[in-house]
Figure 1 (cartoon, one colour):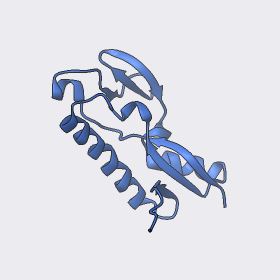
Figure 2: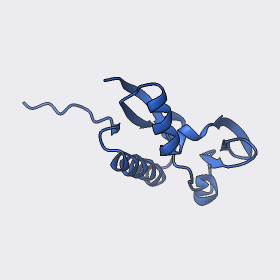
Figure 3: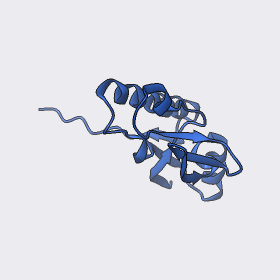
Figure 4: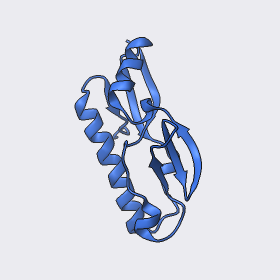
Amino acid sequence: MKIDIHTHIMPEKMPNWTEKFGYGEFIHLEHRDCDACMMKGDKVFRIVGENTYKEDTRRKEMEETNVTVQVLSTIPVLFNYWAKPLDGYQTSKFFNDHIAETVAKEPGHLLVWEPFHYRT
């Protein structure tokens, strides 16, 4: 069994949080001539491939590289630590819900990292 413990994922469609909240430079995704452009304001921050946001592409690549399981996490630039508390909560919930839905589609192949729970 081969387990990839460092994989990032994002939704294929996401709100433009900067427009929604009226401040900051939240990252949003635009599908343009590139695979997908992560936008910071009106500037391209990073170009990402389909394996970042399409489960079927991710699974195909896993099969090609003999990866049995991937542990998913949000792309760190999407954490929005600097956001106002309620806005940060809303963006975090959006990304966490997306990961949970993605994992539910591929049980046994995609997992979400959960911290250990220690008993006293």
